[in-house]
Amino acid sequence: MIVNSHFCGGNIKVNEYASDGSVHLEINRDRKSDFFQWFYFEVTASIGEELQFHILNAKNASYPSGWTNYKARASTDGENWFLIDTVYQNGELRLTHVATHSKTQFAYFAPFSLARHERLIAWSKDNGAEHKVVCQSVEGEPIDKLTVGEGSLPIWVIARQHPGETMAEWWMSGFLKRLLDQNDTKAQSLRKKATLHIVPNMNPDGSRLGNLRTNAAGANLNREWNNPSRERSPEVHGVRNEMFQTNVSMCLDVHGDEGLPYNFLDGPLGIPSMTDSLAKRYLAFVDEYLKASDEMQKEHGYKTDPPGTADLSICTNWIAETFQCLSATLEQPFKDNANAPDSTTGWSPKRCEALGAAGVDALLSSIDSGIITKAVALR
Ligand code: ZN
Image (tube, rainbow, N blue to C red):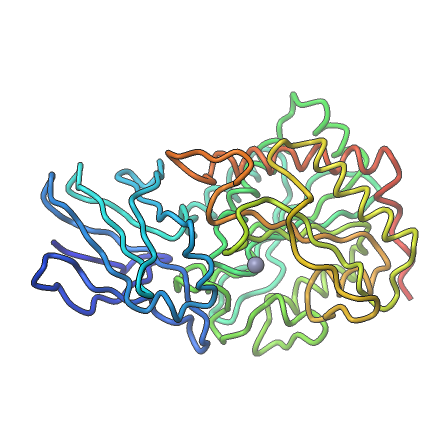
């Protein structure tokens, strides 16, 4: 049996091929950071062989509660990902799978490679999106922005500040396919009313390195918004500059959550300048997304920050405070949607894409009902 992780997004270290037939593994830390939880590796084995992997450092991962009721993903073709036997026991995550093919990939969640990202950008350009490289990452990767529509409302949608949250870019894939569908009347209407500025992958370095949360300089990009630097967080620095050029009516920042088995939104309710009217519009946006997708719920989520205490280094808070506009963070599960579990795939790329497609409905109905309003003039 051979274990390999030397490819885009790969992350695992082999400690030992143990005498009992199991393979002892460890997840590597993010570059220049203590975060870790994302794993992704490929195994070459004989068909019929029982593969057993023990991830020894699971208990020290960034979110150990993420392993409870969690099942790892596997694929034999890199396209279809299914759940495998997974137990979290004695601080180790144990994966078991009988090989049906000579090569099998295992991952924390269905990966979204930079090659797939490039295909998504190329497809979007072919289907009417305008493309711009906003800035470069620490290691020189382009930060791609797609602009769609010609309406007066500048709406930003960004994803994957945390590179291990690949569900965020799967969401983007579904969102873009729907938004750019020339025959979809709601997409047409949204494109007419808004200009959408879309960054499908905020953190290509971290994506390539197999990081959970940080970029190549060890920066957690979603803690850099109030004070980004060209050296440490050029990705946020560049996107922020672009936002000052376009202004912002609304921003949706797409993520994944290790612990909670639900889709949910989190808002900027605790920012210093929060008003009753903006708070109402945020809560109304949550309801619009709920109407747009059965996969969304609002019973489970993060605790609301007490008034005035929100962390302004977080994108959603910083944007609402700076542009006096609606903003929201969307979280999807690594586990499954516990309200509609799928025992074969769990929360999957297909379901991420459907939730992304529903984002078109949520944004359009929010414009039509006055929840997303004209951008406030910048000083
Ligand atoms: Zn995140």
